[in-house]
Length: 305
Image (cartoon, rainbow, N blue to C red; front, side, top):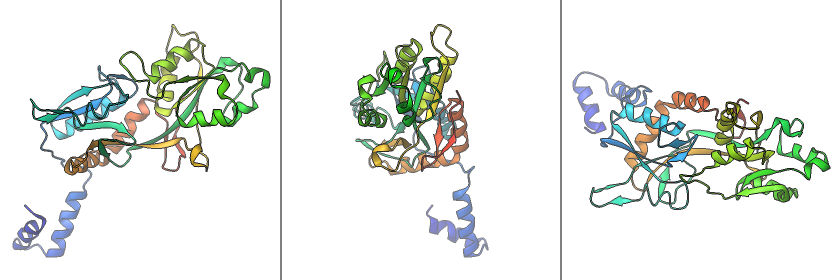
């Protein structure tokens, strides 16, 4: 039934036109309003081994958010797994399966942009973090600039982990610190390893003194290492990086969900689900110790050490 038909129906029942418009507006804007879809399965595109985001055991926070959505829609939940590396979108969201007459999956739970699709508005903002070992003799570090205050003799012995092409790598280059860096590939996701696994392995073993890493990974694995009995070093500090005025000094970003180009009705449905469940999404993110910032990069939830 169209909007006009619904208004006429209300008018025939004796409801004034303007009141009818108000009633429809309230119904469409209700937080608890029912959300429907023509899909009978929620198929999510996800990396198989990329905690804290997702894994095949359903232990990531993106898994938990997908479960909330599937329950609301009243549909089953399935995954199309592919490592978070080159070709992720092409081999999941944009991969058509002729024999089944459908795409491999319909929703990417976390992205900043998609070559093969369009994104929702951001459902959380986070920032890069500096995670360092408290037993490394570095003093109290609260910013990237504090690294420059470490005594020269100790600074020359630093082992700093950083992912190539990430924003903090530029700071190391500009301040002649890259010579002390162990650089990891920008897209290190695979079934065998992930950025989080790298952090746990190399920071926990003492191979690194510190690592510069995306906030959800830094916050989550700081707590994982705290509970790691076999790790040699598990007392860590996590510091949220504050963005500067220069675009090259921007460390905070909004994270959205992604759907295929042209799937506008589904995009609207996903955004409605985000709006309806934003409080629950925030609760899940905090449970995974994800540092949260506002659109300007101001910390609204600091990761717990």
